[in-house]
Image 1 (cartoon, rainbow, N blue to C red):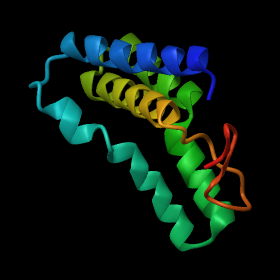
Image 2: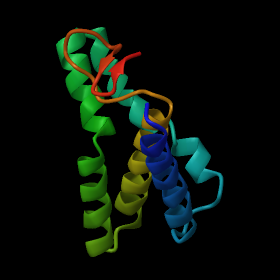
Image 3: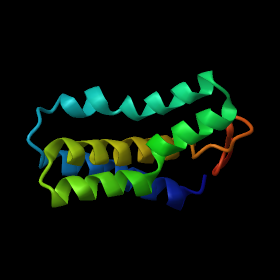
Image 4: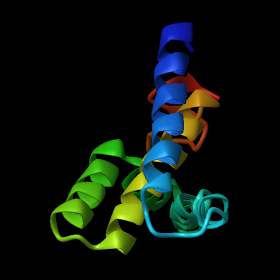
Length: 114
């Protein structure tokens, strides 16, 4: 992936950590939750079409920012936490080359082949 895109993802990941520090949770909650969005891979147990849908649902930054925004507007700390974790996780995944999935194969992503 282009160095500039990797830098952008790294900044988003770091920003999620910084935003987390403003939330009323213990420091260990961030590392404990950072892999939770990968629960979306469970859809691959059914087939690649369902797997791609569930994976993309839990890794889409638009959804993550939406959840964070709802949490902010409603002053709901758990929703805000969920959004921050989803943004951080998705940024880290993309930094490592894992993108949103196409329905034909887990390794076929919007960033190219893994």
